[in-house]
Image (cartoon, rainbow, N blue to C red; front, side):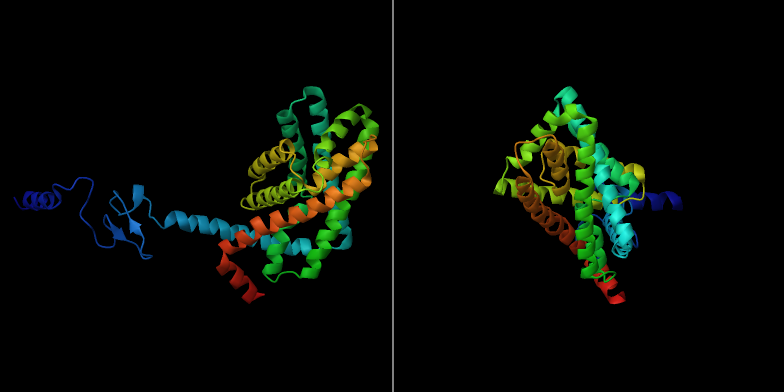
Length: 313
């Protein structure tokens, strides 16, 4: 019968080759190469691994990176264009919000003497920063820099943002630390002990390395949060990074400063000169880690978007 004969012939043509099907027009067979010259190993009928076209996953990843770039440019433009009043209030609120985490850390540390528990409690500060849309100095490495690279802002506006945010973070942090020590005087010893970890590091390579890590971690958190539009998802890196910063005693300029301010108000054995040296080293290290280890590399992931944005700008 004609139909049976054709089936039999097709069967003989593929017999003895388990896991392979006869190539069809428009599909790649086993061992073929795609348009980029890459080896394609597949067992699916359409010539793709596990039935998924080999270019789909890279394309999805690239789209995520491109969308993150676009979000960073849009938000960076807004940050760089803020009025002085907006800059001042956003920076003050950032200092207050992270102070919530400092209070939670000190309370839990005093009650439990458990670094992991107090670290998790500290993440409340980063959760506040995320949901309230306030900012720390170190959160302004990736987003506004991306906008400047895309010619959506100027270096002068960037320096204005950095300087104002850092200053207001620290002023607000000192004010809140003084308030917390007045409201919870029993936390004084815990604050002095916690701040001592940063002061004892001194001006050393160890302290500088911890500062570089601090800048890197916060900028990674910023990138992850700009990879999604879901506030729920954005809380995940806030909790993880906040906990790591705390339990690792990472040298973060603003966080460590708030710890030191609380300790100084409570009568710490070190002085403001010791804090200033620690903070200066932390600022330099944070910038190196955030800009050099994250921002530059993330921009190099999407060179075509950078070129396109600069040409449009």
